[in-house]
Picture: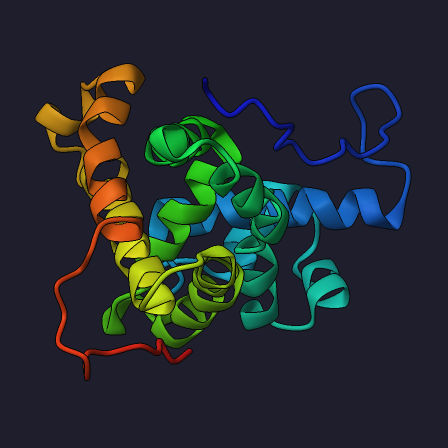
Length: 219
């Protein structure tokens, strides 16, 4: 059975089609504009002026709400789901269904515009030339890998979580950044069928490591 939890952010209040009526609403408009820009051009290719233009505000207002480009990038990378809540729900499935449910969740997440943009922004910015490799590594580690590792009741939990994180990054790169046709054209159902065995291998099957194998992932 597919994961069907609510992954949406609450909508900002607006007056008709105009500007949001609250500071929080305007802050979210800027954050969403930044997310789109970072997803399209990465951290180094995005300026506060571009973000302000996309949001329809003065650049000074961007700084007023977020302080700096780095702080705005961190806000843009905040996932629209709470992985510390979702992951235990996924892993509570019967053993025979866990891998498929995790795979379905990953594919469903990346089928949604905002999570896909969040991951694409992270991947485009994660290389040394992308300008935000440290911030991206820290965000992925604290927001995804550690909650998953804490929920796994098995050996080498942080390594297993990091390997699944590498699968997600590779999938985003191939499907949404590079746009490899053979991957980008797969249906969601076929993609789940392909990656579910990989999820099973990374999270649940024996890893075959020596007793002194790596056990910790550093942020």
